[in-house]
Image 1 (cartoon, helix red, strand yellow):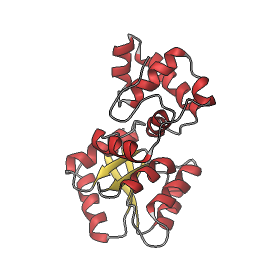
Image 2 (tube, rainbow, N blue to C red):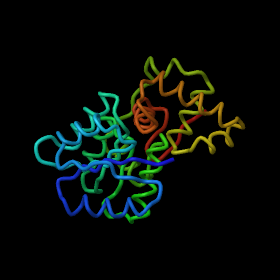
Image 3 (spheres, rainbow, N blue to C red):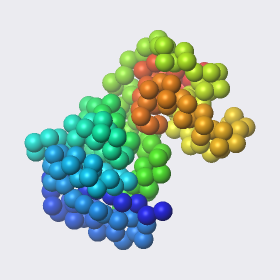
Length: 218
């Protein structure tokens, strides 16, 4: 599978650096570059890359609003570039529809792996990032109508999903086939109104299914 990527960052040197790193990989191709949020939205919806690598602080339309517009338009997955000192950006990006986060102080290997993970339809849920955001910006809530629509098995899947488990790990824990797990995950996302696994994690915390620093119950 060849992964196509759109780079969105207002610094030319940053985009060039990312392009060099990504295009060293045989299975990744950079199909475009955007210098601001407006260009990012236009190119994302026009070029339809597999992944948009999105900076947050850009002139004009910022990366958060650009992500929201791309998600609303049924566009590609967005991988946000972020730093630890702006947790508010992280949570806002989750709500906007981002599929994952990449720390700017990461390694080239982190970058290429993150792109592949998001392109494969998985959420990039680095525990150090996700737990900090959730513990800071979400508040416990009672289970809503959407949560009540889940079957007991789907509830189990959501708890494991919120803990960052992959489909293979969920299958092992629940002694199910991976195909069955994929079906359960799809139904969970549909019933709770989550665009992808990342938003499912946030909703799981907001609905009180799992707690920051703790776990959920089956």
